[in-house]
Image (cartoon, rainbow, N blue to C red; front, top):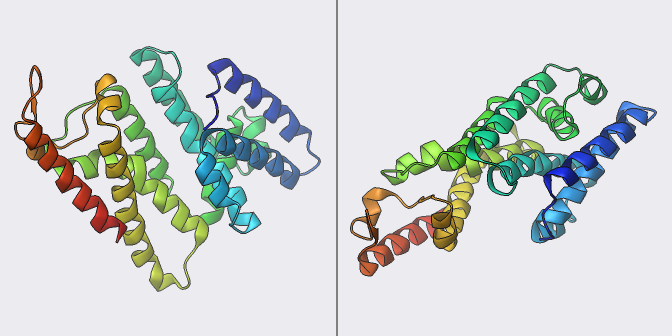
Amino acid sequence: MGTPWTVEQWADREARVRTRALRASSEAGGRRVLVHHGRAILKRYSTSFFLVTRFLPAATRARVNLIYAAVRYPDEITDTFPLVAEQRLARLAAWRAEYERGLACAGIRAALDSGVPPILAGFCQVVRETGIPPELYHAFLDAMVADVVPRRYQTLDDLIDNYIYGSAIVVGYFLVHVYGVSAPEAMPRALRSARALGIALQLTNFLRDVAEDSGRGRLYLPQSLLGEAITPVGPGDPAALARCVRHLAAVADAGYR
């Protein structure tokens, strides 16, 4: 991962991308500008995923670039930009409103003409082309809001339903719609697999980042599993924490399988 862009760098790049896309001689030309922008974001922020996407067919890879940009920018609002909580929430709310405006536009050029951010102009086109249910991106943004105003999750089901669903599962659903299935009847199975993988990946991240998340005031390990591992005044029984970690690791392993 490269050095994250500052708020100003993001704004400057978006402005230049908008200008280039609107100057393109066709809708397809404008789309190529946005895809290239998404590719630059992916390359900057996820070297490993960027390398993996090189194996995808060109049309699929282009859509994945646009999806990645659409999930990366809100994540930067939530975690990276030097903002207070109220500013983060305001930016996420504005981004959500722009998404709705983008969905109402007929295409990329129309969205850009109306002032929709280039990232969302491209992503909304992917939503229209692939049949991604529009409400899934709202669920993703709900998870970003939950990170700004963190709460404790009582059970694993509570964590999955009220956080992991939006933060990871729906992103897998995006990709299922982009990759496609061999036959319509295979879609439910593909979505179940995406759900299992999303849960596994997110739990793995939680177990890796317990200390980092704690520094941000977040605790994703379910209270019912922690037991005496965490007390109101700090760390409690190390053995209880180890049991919780082992249990969640086993859940993640089952998801990978």
